[in-house]
Length: 126
Image (cartoon, rainbow, N blue to C red; front, side):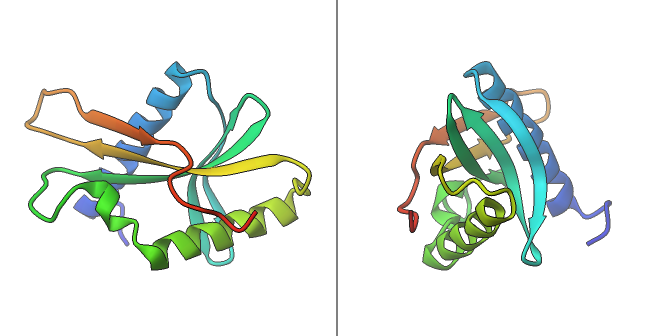
């Protein structure tokens, strides 16, 4: 996808908002768009001593439903697969791990985005 792709630009804005939101909660961001197994993990963060893999979903409207609804079973499996590969690569097998979803809804220009955080959003294989 080209950098001028509106969907990619929306995704990047959403990831930046999610990162800002998580930092305000005290999370430490240790990775952005981490590339593993021909895929990307949006954000990798530390919540205390827990490694958190964050899937960010951004929307500019709810015409196609809430952004969290787009994390179906297939996407959940893929995120878990990427997280497992990251864990093995970085030898984090002994760490506590979870997967969160952060949704970002962008409204009209100039309005604040609405950010929602779903901790432990779905079961992981750990």
